[in-house]
Image 1 (cartoon, rainbow, N blue to C red):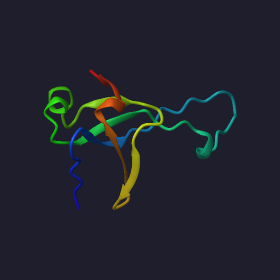
Image 2 (tube, rainbow, N blue to C red; image 1 turned 135 degrees about the vertical axis):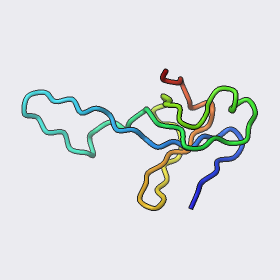
Image 3 (cartoon, rainbow, N blue to C red; image 1 turned 90 degrees about the vertical axis):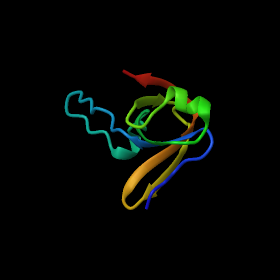
Image 4 (cartoon, rainbow, N blue to C red; image 1 turned 180 degrees about the vertical axis):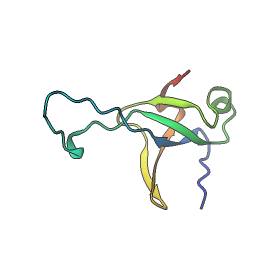
Amino acid sequence: MKIQPIDDRVLLVQMENEEKKVGNIIIPDTAKEKPQIGKVKAVGNNEDLKKFVKVGDKVIYAKFGGTDIELEGTKYLIVQLSDILGIIK
């Protein structure tokens, strides 16, 4: 199954944050921050969007932006162009 976002939306795969260790403190998964970096898997059909973002780009997105979905065991995030804060070069 394949997801094709429409309009100014982008399909991302969330990238895991690097784990920071301080001493012997264990931080449970529920207390960890949601990653804000994702890899673009698909781009909607908006022409302005296609000027800025392409498949394979790594982007930083708004902390509470987007909609989480899970498909065939993979977690995705669909965000709008306005939720993308920058592209990592």
